Length: 487
Image (cartoon, rainbow, N blue to C red; front, side, top):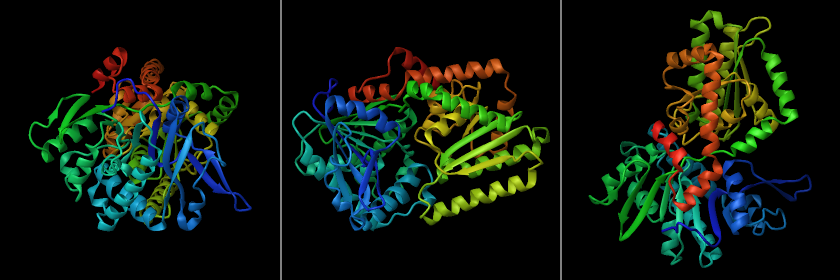
């Protein structure tokens, strides 16, 4: 079990280290800190408490990754980095295979997209054991081990098999599926029991926690599971495992301040002028079939066809960040999206107005903030998402009294229903209707909704998430009241 007053160092394990690597023109490795909420949140904790971040650096042994055994000469994060080396086969079978062809689609309720290759399972077990060995080598008395996400569900079990003793915790950043989906996994018992080797399990939402509890009740002896709502316990092999729902947040204050920087304000004004006098609808997503981009484009097309008065009065800016484009399925998704964009623009474009502006690239941070600040409507409609931090970032950055349209299947919907317009992303007409409604909302209502969103996101920011999870704490009274109203 984790102590309520954690002491000693923190050992963080995740699939990737908090750095990005590249080779310079003369072939030397260069490292820069990675962006992202998890890195932002854990950097100060690791720097304050001391500790080690264990993860893959991103290069395989065949690409020269074995040269990177000591990263201290490349970058100073204020704490130690312990790199894991993977072979090409392990990358392909563990990361691209088991993690992203089995667990990722299954946990997003898309079992027909799964590939349950026994070789993938073998590589997954190999890599988890490699992580456990690296953690064991770093362990000191009083250290706490915090493991992140679906790539590393077996690490605590492997640590126990190695005889390494330490308090362990695990946080799942993606959804946990209902039992009828989870039970399709050929290695369901092994995965469930491995998760229960951790002292504490954290999930994004009460729904994910409930799904895990129901799966445990199916696979474990009767009476092993206790609790309901946002916390529970499981008695397993003589141990008590604590479970909780801890929704991850963003660095709300930092995002809000950065959105007010002069350069961002200037760029946001340019964006608004470019789309004036109509409404700007913004979608920002990584290229992935779970993000509902195809369905969103279909809804926007339906809106333009069914509401001709909105033509030339509304524009969709769809940003798609490249991801896994070397995988055939993702390359096919990119082609489908681009075909839809072409069809919509071919059908509805008029002189001086193009209905869909499509950007297939990662935006610079200032550019992303400018879009957040300027947009009239954020259209965030994943088919399933663990949380979706774009919705939270938009809520604290927007300065246009913007409206948030959010999928009810995003984890963020649990908290943000106080101000968002929730939609079923599979309902094309319903999503189109929500866009129409958002465009017509009175300014006073848009302001009130945005204030409510900012209040939730600011109170339950990424730092509150870290503190609550490490202490095993419930949200404070104000946050608990908000959450209770939303579940």
